[in-house]
Length: 414
Image 1 (cartoon, rainbow, N blue to C red):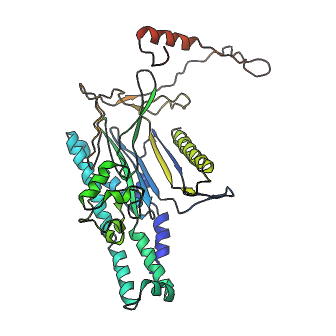
Image 2: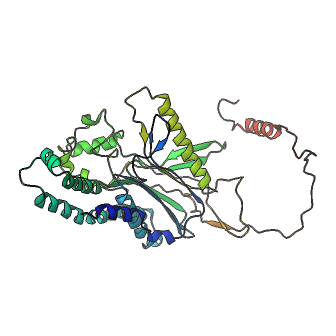
Image 3: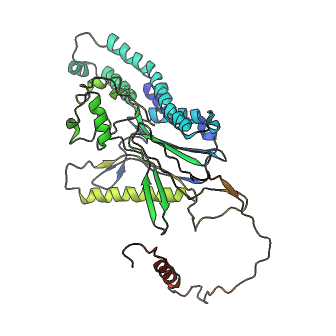
């Protein structure tokens, strides 16, 4: 037991076998550690960073992305990240012929990782029972035990924290030019795309499993929990989600929480550069959150902190005008036509993006460099090495007149 803290540190810093897997070059990662908002303005973490993410390219038509948002430590997030990646990598998913077979595979992957993680907790349970039976005298109250043997109670507290480790998760799988997503908890999958008028649209493909979801409240009522208990609350037991992977505290030991003690049955768990762009998004969210808190600092009900933030950004075919193009590396392009987007409120949500008439295949394009000699052209740079300022709206007026003539002008601009 004395080695528990040492084991946690080595567990946290150990290298993963997934470090050697090929990553997706069309993906960017942004992140920010949790922060307590101090009055003096100095940054301070409330706890170590608990998130894990994946962005792997297993073959030309096989990609795997995931975000695991851990809570009460990173034990569950780390395990689920490695285990689910292994299940996907060593599966025969590319041989599956129908969408339903892929959905069943993803569903089973969530169940397998949940079962596998719970099986790893046996030693922690055994250690806690040993301490409770051998080191704490029978009949001694919790208050007296904390006062007379604080070191023993500290060990039990550390074990309880390990057992309470859980994680929310959002995963995305690309197989044969189709995208499948699934989530558990409040991790989100968002699809950004432009419409016919080049207006950027954002569609949420995942479902938030929290107390603001009426379907989740209905599910809780079916196992004997009164939804009215959570009308003015944002937490269920020791977490904000109504579903998660791991967290034995709200599953096997849910009777310890007053809000969950009335449940008639145990909860059922099933669910299913770009780096600069991703980091810029995270930085802006962090800044907005901090500014919002500072503008509402007089409200004492606001918690002066925020949790870890991780963003996995996958670019399909959105142009990046400032990107440097490689003359040797091929790029992967996807069809922009999205004719089906099936979203359901089932335990696991998968969405197929495909053309109904013909399934689009991945096209590979190679950019080649030209060996022709370049001739110097006039660059309009003056003797002071500055370019004269100018504004030209000709292209805008041409596009405006064309859209107005075709009747495709957005509402409100006519």
